[in-house]
Length: 379
Image 1 (cartoon, rainbow, N blue to C red):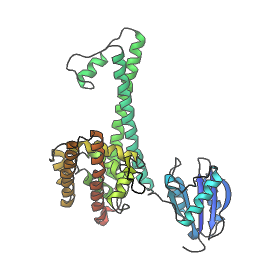
Image 2: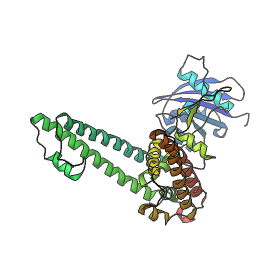
Image 3: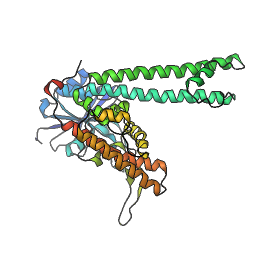
Image 4: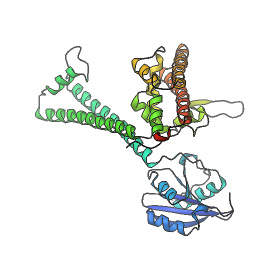
């Protein structure tokens, strides 16, 4: 790196930014606190000289990537840092915004920080829609639990053989009249809440379909290819594509597995080798859909109608990877079952290996050249 490089550490909050700089091998100095506003950031950068010699970093957090997009638009090199991987002194018991910014600038200069992958604004917008649908499904489940437990509390049961949430069950619930007026008021409110969540999910599903239709050709190709895997339908494929972002940023499958938090923790020293539960330090959205998909591999390998239709439209190498995934992961599930392992642990192990096949498919698609006319977003 050039001796003239200015390393800037920022501790970013909703309203303020603490700024510290390190030039060459000199002492890290604080520039104080500035408002978290574009014009204030622009003025601060003007005091540091030519932007080509400025490198900025800040920790990922609730403020998102707005500052990153602003800095890169100004021509400034910016890295967003993984907060959990920032070096910390075990004996340091004083934490302030100024000290945090200075620590970032010092560690940034020495190369001890781990940057994260940052999506562009369009990719982040699609990921927001997918996560909103996930939140909607969680809210719908809570609403259904609330309604079901309310009926159970008053001993209200449908006729024998009427399964919950089916059309006959809903006919029974909607026609139900309880003893008191207030009870009927609460029942109606719970029913309306379930209906509202269903409508919300339908709106978000339509938004996802529209967003994928307008997405870049490479993203659409990844979504189509991932659906060749068993247990991976459209919403799961979009979740995997948006949360992984880019598969080529992982040099090998083990890095992709670590990113999901599905790898076992370890505490080994000397002759002692101890492994614990999974780390759960990765992307929780990925971990959820991966475990859901892994349950499908308890069944023997076969191609369902949906998979046959999907694999007819993907390259032969993608279809081959998807079939190998079925064979290997089913053998893995069966092997661990014979050892009497708990089913939850078996599925977690299968989900971890499933990441390897997802990574392989994603890499294959990203290596394929796109036709010149397909590079742009369809609008």
